[in-house]
Amino acid sequence: MRLQSIKRKLLYLVIIFYTLPMYSCNKSDDNDSYVPVDEITSPETDLIPDRETKTVSAILNFKNPDDIAYLMVRKSGGDSYSATIGREELSSSYVFHYTIQESDPASFSLLLSAYYKDGNESAILSLHVDNRWGFFIRKVSRIARVTGRTMPHESFPNPNNTATGWNVGGTDLGIIWEMQEGKYGIFFGDTYGSDFVPNQAQPGPNGGSWRCNVLAFSEDNDPEDGLSFSSMATDHGGNAREIVYGGKDDSGNGDWTSIPTAAIRANGADYVHYFNMKNWTGWITNYSGMYKSVDDGQTWTKCENISFSSYSHFGQGGYFKKDGYVYMMGTRTGRDSDARLARFRETDIENRDQYEYWNHVAGQWIKGDEDKATTVIDDKVGELSFIYNDKHKKWIIAYFNADRYNITMRTAAHITGPWSEPYELASGKEYAQLYGSYFHPLSASGDNLYFLMSMWMPYNVFLMKAELADMGNFVPGYHVRVNRKPL
Image (tube, rainbow, N blue to C red; front, side):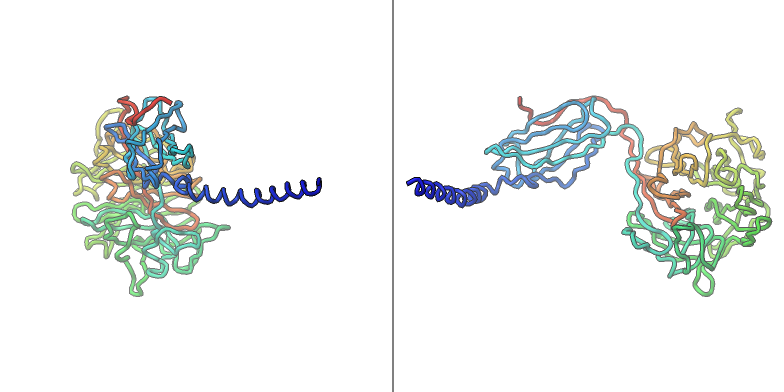
């Protein structure tokens, strides 16, 4: 009897063991609509408040809206917060709104989950809110390679392939200016041929076909997908040729190389400012000077009547035209001096006697005496460029700063200053061995700054994009625009 009882119990256990999975499967089949994976989706999960309404919005899509009892909204970061949105408000494509509260931090997330009628809960949809106010750089990204060959790890565009197209395997700088409407010139520094190979162990230049500088042309007015060249200034063999003569005497006692620092279209001609290097150790130059082209960059000649001494505060520089003047921001050659300011009429670009220099002590421009130029930006200013942005009504300068190991940006309402505290445009931690920062002229309008940046490894030039934002001052308004119910 006892044995039969045990057998019956074992039989019941076996039946239960096999029946439970079938029951579970059937229940799961009945409740497929409640599987919480990606119940809520949104095409945009990174949100920015509307400057006027102080509200963020997102379109929410629901797979099974009829099975939802309500939507729960919580917040990650800042004060504790929760609210519900009733089923009667929801639709398969629902516009969700949240109005920023004064206590909300600069960055936080809204966490949304659906609660079903049977008590199940969906997976959480996280909406990140960028809640910064005032003027700031919202985002910086690398758009494309401008020069050289694509490296194995790179996924961004390389529209030019200059190594095979013009024998430009390695180069740097990328000083860009508008020659005519919609047409741009781009000067590069020391350039090496198609045999150039980036070397992690010994970064920088290598290979043959050394030219001290080369020049590209572009008619690309949409830099969102890269900066395409239409041509380069070439020799008879189709190779990019040297424009500004450099002696290539690397003894340290002669004419080592000629490096462009700035370029401008003035009085119907194109000009490039450069320094002639004697010895890179100590950044000792022989002089700085200018070359000129009167045929849209096809041929260039030296401006014999204008030069800057090796200790001039305008041995390196940048140009920008505004209000009938060419403004020149200058530094001593190297990366350790402050920045000073000059201006002149376009017709006087080759006549330094007509240059005017800003003196903040006198509060005026002083003509013809470079020594009267006083500090405008008190910092270690390396290679630079600057623009006036029409949308933001600001002068914007960018330059390499070795101490911060970054590309620094500053802004000012007036060219004479005061200039803002430094913003970080690009960091050496993210872009190792970075330098150079040359604004594309298209940066003078809109929210986007496009600039050409060099990296010592792989000794080439890249197109960068910085997205500016000016959200104004935060003024508290109404609170959440959702159907709130007591919990």
